[in-house]
Image 1 (tube, one colour):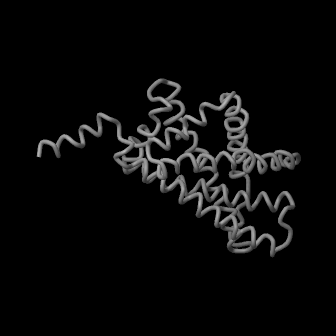
Image 2 (cartoon, rainbow, N blue to C red):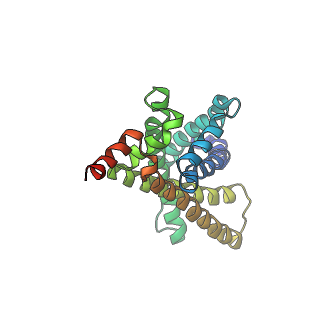
Image 3 (cartoon, rainbow, N blue to C red):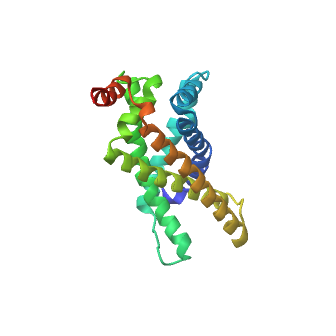
Length: 225
């Protein structure tokens, strides 16, 4: 594959920003609505997305297929690339290594996250209207909360650093100065998007997203007291 890897690498880079990068930002904003607007605001955001026309085909061609190609080819790159940590610029070397490591971790987490959410909706174990309560049940478990917290940081770094690499590989930022400026911008993107996701995780942990039965159970001891 290495002899004919130019096109797959370019496609892998492009899909990481368009459409997956745009979807990643949209996902961060949708989840952030749980923090900004509470349970009702989050449900409105989710309903608005699922009410889009041809939503199945939009997700298939704009999310699922790009994720499969980007993730699988990314695994190939991760396990065939020479990390070369310490050989070139210190910061860029570690960013390159972390890009591969966070890519593998994020792809595995995305598969697991889809299983916990979208697949459970498809199986009838929850609904799109109850996904906020479902997330509450997940992230109120300490182990899962830590996993989500780490995954958010890994995925956001992979996205932000991937934008920097995209700008370089597509000849948009040419020269050390332009690449230094874009590095700072991408770091700002990392901080902003990571904060959006982290705030949403804490919002999902709040009692507002607890199911009705769980809320009653939590109130019962206080009422009895």
